Length: 96
Ligand code: SF4
Image (cartoon, rainbow, N blue to C red):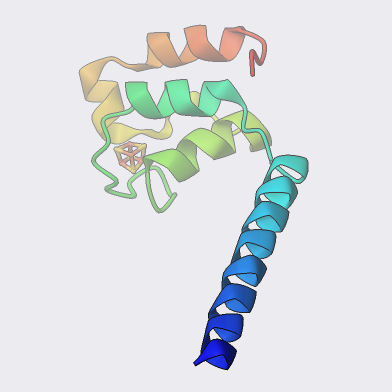
């Protein structure tokens, strides 16, 4: 019976150590995203229709911010008049 408890204690300690290690690694290797991506995603229609040539609104927003993609490719967004807001967001510098 005592050997069983040793096993449980050992596995619990290993779990805690792995959790702490993963937490430290997650903080150390964290990739911070440009805040404009989140803002663009909020402005875009969110239909994820793919008419812009990207698999979804977030992919299109990332392409605008990181690859310099043109702003007017979102067909539903054009009808909703989101381009001015998108241009305003892109005029700002990254405020992580
Ligand atoms: S066209 Fe507009 S709504 Fe459709 S996926 Fe692209 S960004 Fe989203």
